[in-house]
Length: 73
Image 1 (cartoon, rainbow, N blue to C red):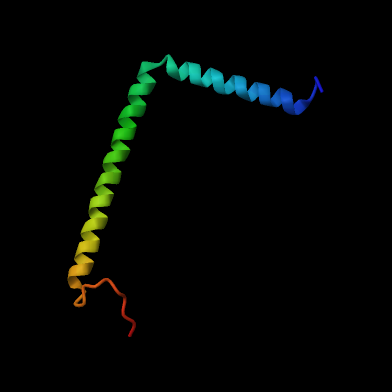
Image 2: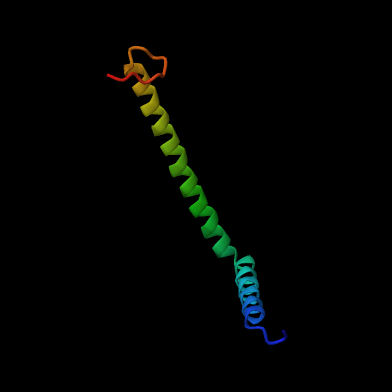
């Protein structure tokens, strides 16, 4: 099983992942960019959460029953 192609492929993949990880760990600029991007994404998610809450509040205020039950008909 020394020449098992699957084992060789796994070794190459593991080496490639380790190499990418080492490159990223030693690159403070990459970390700074990643951090900046995560903050931007979190800002968008927070804004979306707020907008969804506003829509829900508006929907409830227009519902004369205001008990959250959907009425057919």
